[in-house]
Each structure stands twice: as structure tokens, then as C-alpha cells.
Length: 75
Image 1: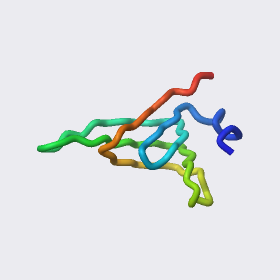
Image 2: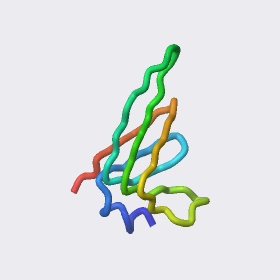
Image 3: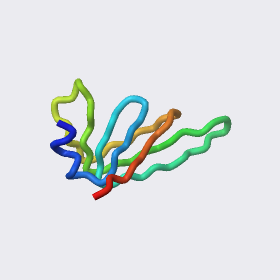
């Protein structure tokens, strides 16, 4: 399924919980008084989640204290 849609997207995004394909992604580090977290905003998104019946989503926002990987897909 992933191979069927990957050419439609510009970025591959991995978090500790999910895998995304997106055409636009914004990653921001947010500092708090004692720590920091990452805020991730994506548009035109395909979500890999075994419990999801519809994988295409208009917008996704993720907040996480864990690692985030963002890769631009080569053409």
C-alpha cells in the first residue's frame, strides 16, 4: 500500500507512534520551563495506522517529547 502512494508525496515523517507521508510539514521545537517538545504540523497527509480505514487526511498536528524524523523524498 505504501509503495502505491509514496510518489504522491514530498516528505516521509516518522514519530514514535506513527508513520506519515505529507506534501507540507512544519517542525517546531517548543521550550517549556523544564523541558522541550516538538510540534509537528502536516498537510495533505497519508497516515500509516493499522486501525485506520481512511489513510488520507487533510491536516495532522502532533506534539511529542520523542524523536521525530523528517526526510524529503528524492524525485
